[in-house]
Image (cartoon, rainbow, N blue to C red; front, side):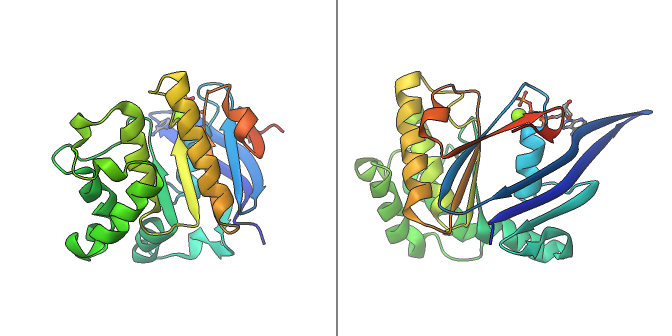
Length: 224
Ligand SMILES: Nc1ncnc2c1ncn2[C@@H]1O[C@H](COP(=O)(O)OP(=O)(O)OP(=O)(O)O)[C@@H](O)[C@H]1O
Ligand SMILES: [Mg+2]
């Protein structure tokens, strides 16, 4: 069974009297254990697609299922539980909390899930070790390089052991060598677990080489 099954997704935004169609009938099926990149021109609908898959947004029409669950069937509470437990998000600007240490940032999803930060520390340290930052657990974001901050964000995205990892231009703010390291890490994370999908929006030409599949979005549709 596919991890992600999207059928005829349409997302319209009302802007006064005008309607913008960010997605215009996008259909897509994605398997686990894969590192998939989403490419296409600016404004094509890539971020919108990612947000709908992560239940951060809902389609105007069409269906989106993750692991066989139709996201439209989820109540508000179930939908937020889905985001907390099943999805990990990685952003271009890392979105780390500046006042928290690396390990506290990684452990944060547990706190948001009503667990104690302290209890989550061993797992957070283990994940930081895994992304090559075992020696930086007590550093704050301002005491880390861009590539290291993105590694912390990747570790954080893995804290709840999600099925899907969604990354929107994770290398957009990194130099090419650091970006390549981050891509390699994301590929490793995808390939480590046959049930996990890593889906990444990118403008990075190097991405195609390390990804298992490249999905092109054009004018709100899948073009491949
Ligand atoms: N909240 C919103 N309200 C109105 N229009 C929106 C909104 N979000 C996105 N859009 C429009 O939907 C279209 C698709 O936007 P989206 O952010 O998905 O593009 P993208 O492919 O991620 O582009 P980029 O590569 O520049 O990030 C664009 O025309 C955009 O202006
Ligand atoms: Mg975008």
